[in-house]
Image (cartoon, rainbow, N blue to C red; front, side, top):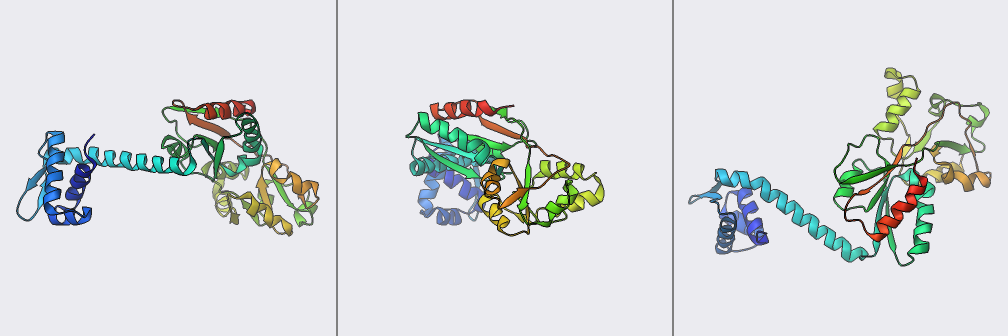
Length: 300
């Protein structure tokens, strides 16, 4: 592994083209910078810079080494971030990334089972409608991801498990006028103020199809939701007044329906989730393995 000071010096000089500016960037003397550049060239066995009195430019070998050095810097930064995260969370922490639809339906029952067997295990649960969750999984931000992976390309060294499909439910305050209108289509739902988590491309495409396609359907779906939030505490808070229709999983609304605060909207059309679980196929821990096996009880 190249000395980190030598790597930093190479990248600083490649960017600035000036020994003085690169030394200032690193907070070292010109002599120290020169020594670090010498170490970089000794390590690679290459002449990396054309040196002149006023500037330094990359040789052809230096230009070819530059992307390698940049990738090494990214790896070192990722390593430092992971070590810092380990200090923050401790080695006995399971990192779970998930979409907002899964928290009550899948995360909670699996957590109960895992904690029963591994009571000392800690959990960090990061909830969001992630755009590229498998990238975050591969980078080590999650041990397990649970969410919609419809439009996520296949990734190397990742195991994916498709979960049982479940029907999306739409609810509104018990006094909302939508309950007087009979069974609804999705077009009918969108005639009222609508709130939900982020609608990514899969959901937008599904909704456009359900509205018959065409420019009018695209325009209508792209205007939704009126309130977007990946936190269901916020979304269910909107249901205290007869204004918004909110979409989600039935478990999210069970207590509110039982309390007769809200009512399910009667639907002509149905929508189902497309939830998958993902983990790295290598280097899994006992905690990840146990969590994964519990998730498997809910697979399709």
